[in-house]
Length: 60
Image (cartoon, rainbow, N blue to C red):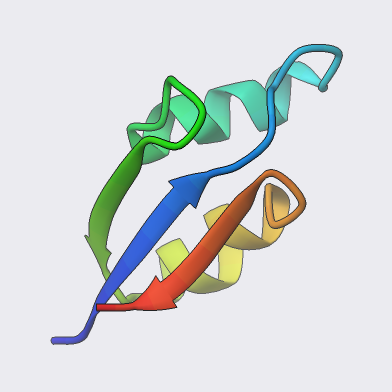
């Protein structure tokens, strides 16, 4: 299965609780932190879509 590299590029300060929880669920805490996840519909279509303005995504 393909992998995605997800990098937090903006702060979660002054963001709704739902977006903060989504970042935590992705494993992102600090700015410029990078995590890898499988490219599944849950990750791609749901979680990343909710916080696309706070993260950058590239195929690994």
